[in-house]
Image (tube, rainbow, N blue to C red; front, top):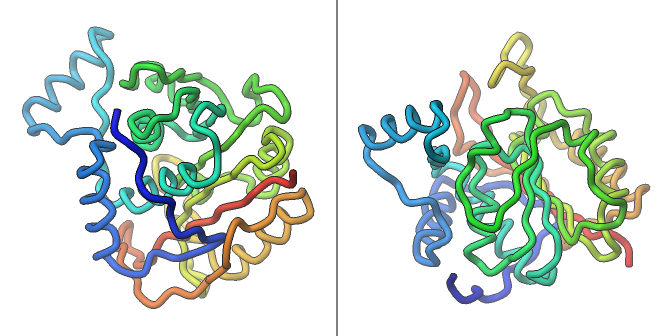
Length: 251
């Protein structure tokens, strides 16, 4: 394990501003040894075939585009919660955040996903659960933090998610989210991602989510900036950015 990084600048809401921020985040994750190491294509294919047969764990398919989300989440939690507090990651299949948190010194980590392959994710000291977040066996007020990176846009009922999260977070706990975003609405009618509906959040969506969270005792954990100056992400025929959202549960 490596030592902790300096406390991060905290934001309640912030959009990814440029591709350069992704590159810098990936560089920082590598420098702190918080990333899954990249391997050659041939080795990765062989490893995945072995994992499909149940012979080994699944290698993380590192998506460097998501480095901004992971780096921001790890830094935010290092600055706000105890490293021995329970952290749950929702949508944990192929997510690097628990791996990074473990290497940053966090000791109580769980991930849940409906994909059964999540049980074969790598990482000593990380517990992976198969199931729907809304039905997961998690004690009320037990979580120091809940992370949910790039899940909200895939057909998630946002209001129900916030309600469930608020009931699971301990006083002072943190809820960290990222989602696809553009201030003006972008039409994704008929488009899917990973077999599910795909929705790019807008400013109106973000304002509504923040309002819902506040009624549940979750306040933005820093300044809120919903502006987006560039669209550094192009995928599935749309150009957009990512939005970071961080909330703190009332003490």
